[in-house]
Amino acid sequence: MAACEGTNAATFVQSELFARTFREGMALVEETANYLDGAGREASRALSRSGALAYAGSSMRLTTQLMQIASWLLVMRAVREGEMSFDEAKDEKFRLKAREPACRDMHAEDLPNALIALAEQSGQLYARIARLDAELFGDARSQPAERDAAAQQRALLDAFGRGA
Image (cartoon, rainbow, N blue to C red):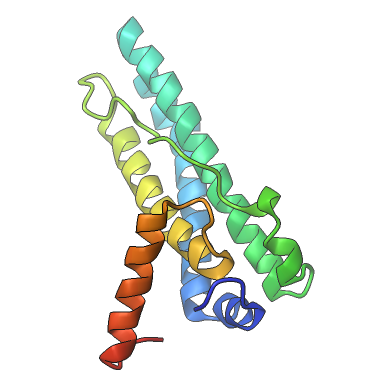
């Protein structure tokens, strides 16, 4: 996929990769919401004061990250369904924002393992979607060295016949 080519975006939003990513993202949003409203709420009550503060901060960052993921996926679905053009979707307001890890204190003893696992899953999904976003829309926000490395990698893959 070349940056900013509408045909590649159209192909992507119709692909099984997009459908799978969409399902995974929405399922993770739902799973996290259920956890935070249920078992997570119960677990947070048993935490120390510092643990409860770490839990609150981590759950807010996790929720924010998942809402960014869901928003991006919904915009791409709108492109797929013809409700939004690719040119509209590439507007900066629909792009992923810079992120910070959902659990900065992931090794804090007090944080529940389930929250840590959800934060790790969310971080991995966010990283994958950020790569897709950069590939579809170009990534002017990345450092020149990162863009150069990506270009070199694509050139190598193309040279060996494995490019897309």
